[in-house]
Image (cartoon, rainbow, N blue to C red; front, side, top):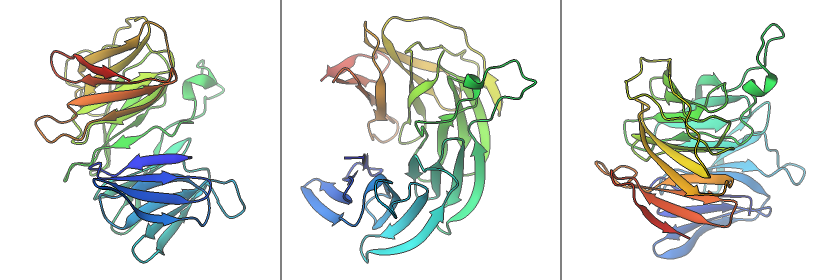
Length: 298
């Protein structure tokens, strides 16, 4: 298995493997569609429609990791193909926009016409005249990015140029809202709640940076102060204000977090729970309420 993803309302699950991909309905559990014509390294669904985005695994000739295919699963025909200069690491879709994430940039397309609307440079090389090290401008190697699925909203989050910074972006109006300095080190996982009101993040070294509660001006960096914490923490901030709402500790021993996700609840309980998958063979779920009590650790 090379890739997996739920659709926007978690009614379907898609899995990409080195032999193809398969789509399941979750309730009742059943196979809805499958294809075994080549490895799939990235797969993305659009609600319960027949539209699926696929990127090759690159394990065989013809399975390019730089080519994105928009496919109609009902007719098993290709709608369009997009080729990029480097490997596609992640694809996110909602009813209006398509995000294609590369190491150094993120492309935003209009989903209805597949027209390129905007390109975000998510990493820039260090200037020879600059005192900062090249690590401060490391590319987005993990392909981190997320976009809310609420109708009429296109809130997106992705790593900014400096380690630990998150860019809050309006993918509908195509402008930056703010930049949050949320972590002390490079981001390891990133997620936005379904309606776009909360953002969860984890870093490689696990320490969170609580943000000030003053609402930011558009395009500004939200100032923070450093506060070290033991173990690995998952921080939850408000969008787009950047207010630190919760800081969940995974445990006393640091561990790498590979994935973050919110529950698909409707307003006013948007993202009522968040979960994390870690390298310590555990998954933990927290309730994002004022009490911020843990629900379970698996």
